[in-house]
Length: 311
Image (cartoon, rainbow, N blue to C red; front, side):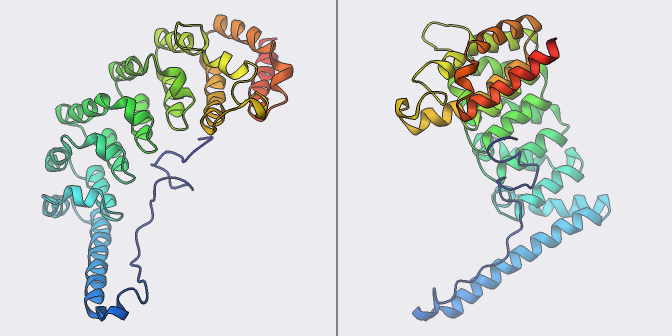
């Protein structure tokens, strides 16, 4: 990704924490109050839990299937606690990846009514993505997707929930992608200016069908009543990242257009030839002004590249 943390499936800088927790001891926090013994007991108990979780994770990678099934059953009743734990979430992910679906129904059952909350959790969002990737029970997995769709407008703008939304757009069924686009319609410009939701809008442009893409592009760059379009917001004198600093009021406006410029570039990549010709003509009119500003230069470079390809 060009901004913000990469998708949680990765381990790059900025992503939700992936490292397994090492016990931390804060000298002097309880010793001075005479509670050192109690603190040590808590410390050792936490260390034991971490050790057991890491041992369980390693075991799931090497033991036979029947042993995995037997071992996984011990987690029944402790799923949500594990999902929210820095180490335990890796165990649940591994269970979903390597144990047959019919043997881990209790895991999915624990998520019922909790999917939106898990999707906005730094560890929970990873687990939900593993479910979408590996769970083969259509009825239960559809329940997970349905809960995502119910909260998609909120999830799209969340620092972790946007990853789950992108995952459905990339790997989901056509009708699920259509449902997301339908729910976001009418808010496309606003979300294109949001640090997290702008990634979702790009995925909508990439994975939507021709009619959906045209609808999105029209909302973003075409004049619609009550919804100023993104191109004109970016280019109009006195508004957005391309305006003089003295004309900009508020950090949100600066940030919004910073992220919106990526959406404009994605539009140029995914639109039809006819739409691209119209857009290039409109953008070229503003090229001299765009060259003066940081984010405008990105669009200028893309326009010049596309112009060369057309020749």
